[in-house]
Image (cartoon, rainbow, N blue to C red; front, side, top):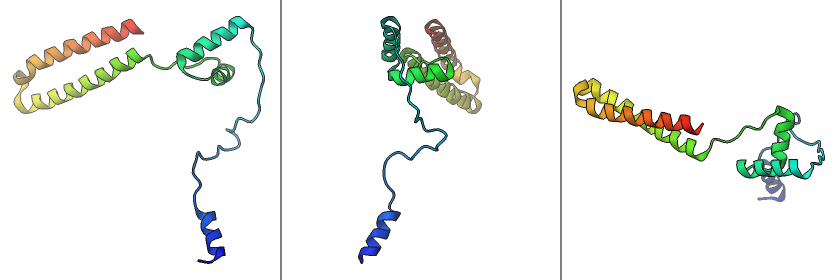
Length: 126
C-alpha cells in the first residue's frame, strides 16, 4: 500500500468513544454557585443517597425544579419478583386452557396469595 492509501484508510476508520452531542444539547456554559454549610450538607446527603454527582443534582434542580430519585433497592427487588410471578401466572393460564381449571386451582390460589402479599409489601415501602 502506498502512503496516500494508508492516509485514506485512517480517515475512513471510525474513532472510538462517545459520539459528539448536537450543538443545542451540549452544556458549555458553566455557572459557579456558592452554598452555606447547611444547604451544602443537604446536597451532599442527597448526592450520597442517590449516587449522583453534586453538579448533576444542582443542574436538575435548576432546570426541572426537582431531582428524580432512583427506585429504592427493596422496591426494585419486589418489582422483579412480581414480574416473575406474573410470568408464572401466564404459564398457569396456558396450562389451564390445555388441561382445565381444576388442574391448576391449588397453584393458582397459592400464587395469587403471594402476589397479594408482595403488593401489600410494595405499598408499605412506598
